[in-house]
Image 1 (cartoon, helix red, strand yellow):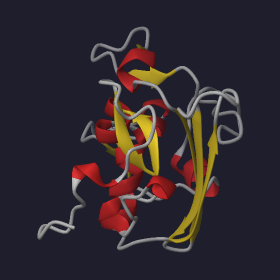
Image 2: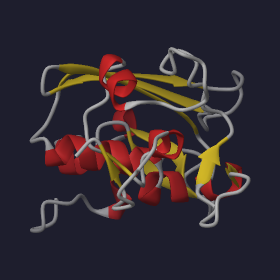
Image 3: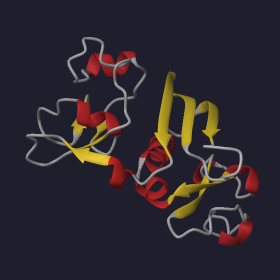
Length: 175
């Protein structure tokens, strides 16, 4: 371990991480106490790991001072590859059960702009909000987000933000 508290890069050699578009993605982030060995590393899309849902989830947990009951289910597309296709996380944060699902892809390549939005806010195609959007209008209210277990505020870098109404335009909903 380095004096900064980070692990040396050469700690875990996991097949797939040598690709230029993949990072050594920690299942439990090293900044949250995860170890840098093969049991805690998966090949993870670099953008997802550094700036996407994975990075956002880790930041939320760090900002909250940690979480409990952390569970990771990692899906692989077949029995021959060692590169995951999907991540499913559940954890308890400040008394709220949180569920995170995301594919192991570059979020910049799967996000699409909304029609009529002058700022072209991205919406990830693969997000199904039907279990959150109780009235089926394609938008998520603060009450719906809370009922689904999301911690507020929802910021503009969270995938759910793009389904919500930021009336004051400050990049946060439910502050």
